[in-house]
Image 1 (tube, rainbow, N blue to C red):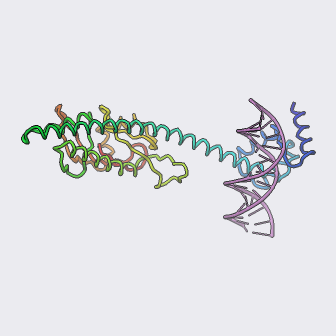
Image 2: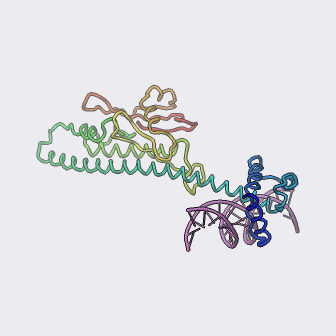
Image 3: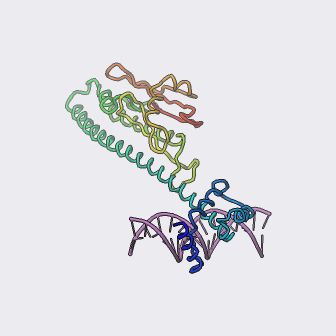
Amino acid sequence: MAAALNSKHQQQQMDNNKYVRYTPEQVEALERVYNECPKPSSLRRQQLIRECPILCNIEPKQIKVWFQNRRCREKQRKESFRLQTVNRKLSAMNKLLMEENDRLQKQVSHLVYENGYMRQQLQSSSATTTDNSCESVVMSGQQQQNPAAQQPPKDASSPAGLLAIAEETLAQFLSKATGTAVDWVQMIGMKPGPDSIGIVAVSRNCSGVAARVCGLVSLEPTKVAEILKDRPSWFRDCRCLDVVSVIPTGNGGTIELVYMQVVSLTVEAVSDFFC
DNA sequence: AGCGTTAATTAGGTGT
DNA sequence: ACACCTAATTAACGCT
């Protein structure tokens, strides 16, 4: 078989001096050298032809071209693998964001409904009614915790005010977190560095979990949850911690808005968080 | 026939 | 000028 193959190759070379397919043995020999040294010098290539009988019928120029093409192939394969990895992460992130979007849309519908209901109540009742609605809104939308403003609340006594505060805080959180998240994954077509982007999302309906990091940040959500729940660890890695405000909940608990700056969850980056 | 692989070619850049 | 490189492209071949 090999002999037939070799003779076929020989015939090809005789018939058409343009295209030659090297034999598996020749490729194997070249691969061995490539694994030791992907970029052999001219001298090393000449030595290869002299010392390896199986390669003696290949021109020095062909050997050079083979190594060029081999390097090119490796680069393409690595790039292909990298893109597949990025694609998997982007798909996972997309799924999470779709879920988050869906949940937020439902929350908006609910809040719009409650807003209408509150307006109706206000119109139909006297102005002296005690307003407990803020807590009910907070708890219905966010069972565990609620992002609030770093600035003092402008109007924390109304659902709309609380919602505005929550949105403002979320925006602040994202603007800080997206700039400092750790272990970036390079975006397609983007060089690694400060212009890479990532997304950190806050999950406001997960009982017992304050936030989750997802998307391009290469950190398992469960790991983030562990860190966030392990409050003593916050202080261990904490550079700066400030309780911005404390909001009492209807069931005797409290929601603390905490701004903290920590030294990396996994690597040496500094991250800002609101929890 | 279409497609993947790969040897060979070409263009443009770099270092000596 | 020359050798060599990368990147893009071409073309031959084998497989399905």
